[in-house]
Length: 304
Image (cartoon, rainbow, N blue to C red):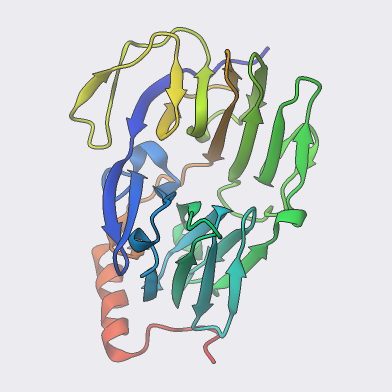
């Protein structure tokens, strides 16, 4: 057996409004990034009120990062400065590498019942790749392999590998893992994670128990407001568990099923200069990016 990863802290996201008026829950981001390196931000935009998401995210720039959008319900129409257009449907993933710069828009639409459900993760790019050519990877539901075991655990493998099943995104410098794990009631599961990698899980349905007994206190997004944490290490829908180092994540369920997203990646350990949708390594690089926007020279590669 490998070394079990214990929970370092549990985070509850906070409501924010982004874009042209999209109500979402920011699980982490726009604060201290060290704990989540190489990841920068995680947004949960599940909603059943179209008035809270239909105005979407009109044209806006990105540089120096990757944005990963994963849909569960509804759709998102997108377009960009490379000339790409498309729709992200339930079960689909869009892995966008902004690199040297891209301008795009994302416009969500609900399903027939007006529901929208999905998540956006931001991953940092290392200094050596900040100014690489931008690119899109539209990954449809049927392109994402599924690992299943005898206990009824099902894992959609977007990136990373489990049980010999490897996801379709496999050439990212930070070697990220992105797993969508569904577990029936009364089941147990062990997920290997490379030592030294940052790892965290975000529960999107039910309640999952990670590992054994934990520290009875955790803290919220800002690291200031403490709240009691169940000593049985349970983490519920809308909560994130950040893990300490180790070789594997052990998880179990009790009387109800659970679903969670598990993320892991190799930390970059580089300085972060961040303003809005642009993340660089120095303030000078950040200033240059916004000057490029003002001058109309932001797009360096592939514009048409």
